Image (cartoon, rainbow, N blue to C red; front, side):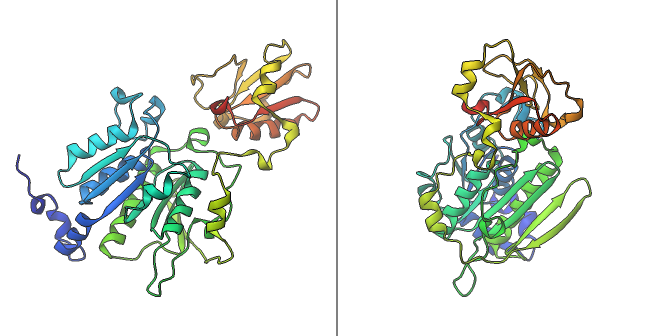
Length: 359
């Protein structure tokens, strides 16, 4: 079938604010989408369908069954396949006017600067806080605009960071909103999320990208939009530039790893090596707080208490036992350990450092 761009984008170019000139700007644009999951997959599809000329997708992960309820462009037959590859293929099927490519490797401090250097706009579709800060810092260093999106349970967050002003200065970035990486916030896998809010936040990000490229409308600069799905409400948090933050120095000295134990009580932690020494003891019990109770665990689990349903009041302790609480990254397991220790001060209980992901 011979499809012309004029016919394909007719409804969009009919808008006087976009028109043919706006469509040409989209066709010339080069956009990098990092993360091809709940946020990144609809972002990629809608950007391509809007006429973005060059699109590069980045994600090291593969499709899992638990992804399917919110990552709606993946199918059951895609399980265990590369997210970036499948999504790139999906884009190619839907629009002939976008040059799409992909990278199925993780973003690291060593690769990020080269990765983003050739793109006009960077879109963050990740769910890792350290990686979000890595992307933000790299965009500041290379003076690239960043369209940010994030999720926490029923809340979603959107902003457009690091946009150049007329005087040559730049708008606020992620560190102006949150200077340091929080160490106690679970990702969506551990905290859970509702699928409509994933799509809502992704499309708000797409909207920001289109406005940015076509120079149309008012961008979410120097503010953070916060949307709540339960109340169907939103408000904008004003941001102020913090010139005391030296991102070049931060980038130089940070490794951006998933280290959450800096603010955790060491007496409530057990390392993987220490755990292995006591794993076979009869007095030891492992408690999994993974929300997906059928998720594979590399050792025997005696109790399963999904974090989403956890209540310290329901726990019946055996004070003759030692308990080790586990989760994926060591965040929710520490929260549960802390609450149980507060409820039962004489209980012997530990959280597995860095979780089973790094076991």
